[in-house]
Image (cartoon, rainbow, N blue to C red; front, top):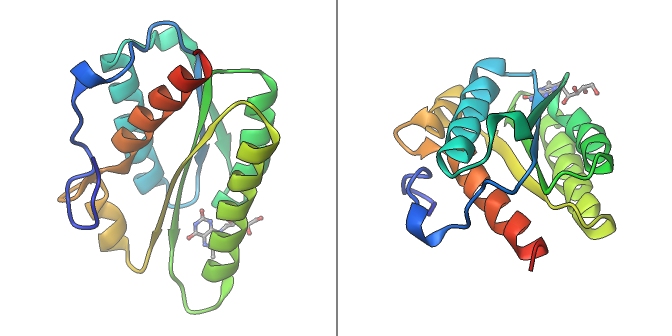
Amino acid sequence: MATALGNLSEYNADALPDGSPFKIHLVVSEWNNNITEALLQGAQTTLVQLGVRPEHLKIWKVPGSFELIYGAKKAQQQKPDAVIAIGSLIQGETQHFDFVCQAVSQGIKDLNVQSDVPVIFCVLTDNTLEQAQDRSGGRHGNKGVEAAVAALQMANLNSK
Ligand code: DLZ
C-alpha cells in the first residue's frame, strides 16, 4: 500500500474481498480535471479488476472539491456499499487552498460519522501540479487505485 514516497498502486488482489456483491459510487470534482479523470480511471479499473460489475459503478460529477461533500452526501442517500470522493487541490497564492482542504477533509469525516455508507477520501492536496501528476498515474502510482482498494475493504467491513 501507499507510503509517503512509495507507489500508491501496489496491492495484493488475493488478500482483498471479492467486489462482485458491491455497488460503489464515485463523486468526481471537475476542477483540475486532467488529474481527477486520471484518478477516476485508476479507481474504476481497479474496482472492475477486483470483481465489481461495471453496472454497479455510478459516477457523479461536481464542480470543485468543496462540492465533494454535498455530492458524497447525495450519493450516500442512494445506499451504495461505499462512496469514493475524488478531487485535486493544488496550492495557489492565497489561503483558499487551506480553507478548502480543511473543509473537504472535515466534511468527508463528518459524512463517515453520520452515515453507515463509508466515504473514501481520494483528494490530492499538493503544492504543485507535478506532485499531483506524480500521484495520479505518475511515478508514485495512482491514488485512485488505493481508494478503490480502501472502498472494497470498507464495503466488506459493513457486510460482516
Ligand atoms: C476556487 C478553487 C480553487 C482556487 N482551487 C481549487 C483547486 O485547486 N481544486 C479544486 O478542486 N477546487 C478548487 N476551487 C474550487 C472550489 O473547490 C469550489 O468549487 C468553489 O469555491 C465553489 O464553491
